[in-house]
Image 1 (cartoon, one colour):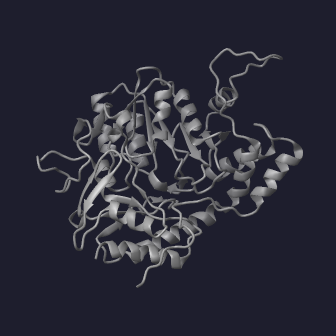
Image 2 (tube, one colour):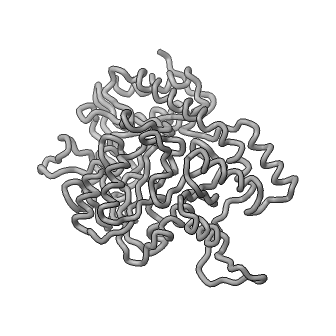
Image 3 (cartoon, rainbow, N blue to C red):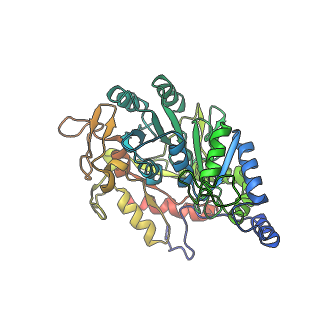
Length: 417
């Protein structure tokens, strides 16, 4: 098959507009409610809570702002250790540091690419007094929520759920964003529902929701002048952005169905190749399939080394690596992205503790280690690092045509010739 470069870029995941978004933005403009109050905000909070099944939602400027408010509600203070997902975007982790907390990273498991409950148990054995756990649902796939929540309950720890990527995904028929004491979703430009920006704090506790409403509007007191008795933030969502989100929300299920179809076409198209798609527990969960990712079988990896900002590989017949596939897709004008680099491998957090199911440790090396779950020295490798080194996020834009996806599949196949 002769592969031609895409004339129009095939995106990883770009916004999909439908029309009603502009109606609600115009409504904000026409009524002059352009600030952080208005009907769009009220309706977004109502509709999201109704869809997800939680009691209270506070619309904020970003998912990161929502996570920060969750960490603050959980009472994290300077010097407090907080257990958190290791393989995630740093927005999951940074709010802990905003409050002076110390992230302790919990390794990933292969079944869902999320926090490993066995490693979390090990972490509590080492630090039984930790009182906050932040979990993320990677690429729209729910983690092992029951196991993680049971561990948190046994140790009296508050669970904060980062459902930024998993809006609309379910675990045992219940929406993500409802399992923690405090939860967040994101409406960033690449998410399954977007406002160009924005996010929400979700909780079943009215007092907590009211605190966030106050904190997010600079913690103003009920006085005729600007009275401030505690630290506040400029975190409230704009009524204009809320108009975009409001217009998007009716299309959530449609977007999920489109993303799922993309995932299924990849599954079929890669049949016979030494790759697998990002996994999920089909008995208990239904992802929103936000991003479709692949992982290359260990014995099909060509030699690859990644430094801090660059990667090198040696092409081998019948083998490939994420860097080669990434570069090939880029050559044909298709966007892909490496799997999230685990937090314990990031320069900013490299000295933080990192706990695997085998115990505590630090980052090992960026180079690929073969030999299953143990390295040449017989010691266990980091599962998150292994997935990062063998995995790649594929074009998952719900406007991608079947023909475009077929070409993406052919490009991947070509890398293994």
